[in-house]
Length: 227
Picture 1 (cartoon, one colour):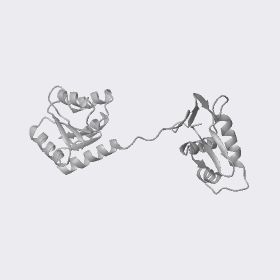
Picture 2 (cartoon, rainbow, N blue to C red):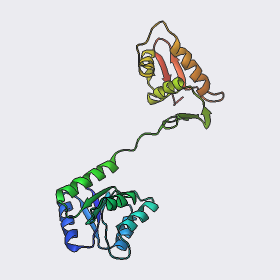
Picture 3 (cartoon, helix red, strand yellow):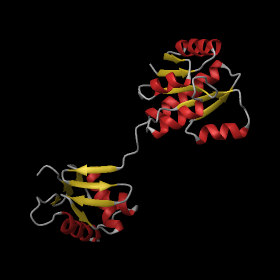
Picture 4 (tube, helix red, strand yellow):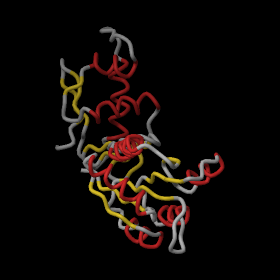
């Protein structure tokens, strides 16, 4: 059940919104003015906020948005407003709004837009780090650390190691590495995989650290973070 905060001073509009959201399966909290709405919104306990652009109480919708984003509250906000000019919509979005719906509006469109905002927020964040024991790979910067030491890898070495870390504890064959890293079929006569693995091992299995990369003769390699 999505938890929605509705900050709307017009009682009739607020009641219509609440009825539509409750019928849609949402739990609704109401706030009739800007200051009260901001206090509730700062809790960050809501899946989305429906925010009227023009509000009493000394703080309008843009003021609430600015305060929320300054406080690092990233709850999705759908702005409601009778101001339909493009400049006004742009102002609302630049202030931190996630969507903008002009009055009058249909309840079905309101709930559909909120569904999109809630669904977007619930998507798992993009993976940025891989770890295997004391080995860590930053997928954004392509930097590699082992027990606090920087590991400098060439691009192909990095891609090989990333693949092995993603399959930590599993046997990866030469064929798998060739197809996934080089993107073509493995040639039985070449020793290019062995050469690259040897170079990676020298950089990753530093003196004093437990070796992580093991060769299984006739099978392939294992990156073992448990030994």
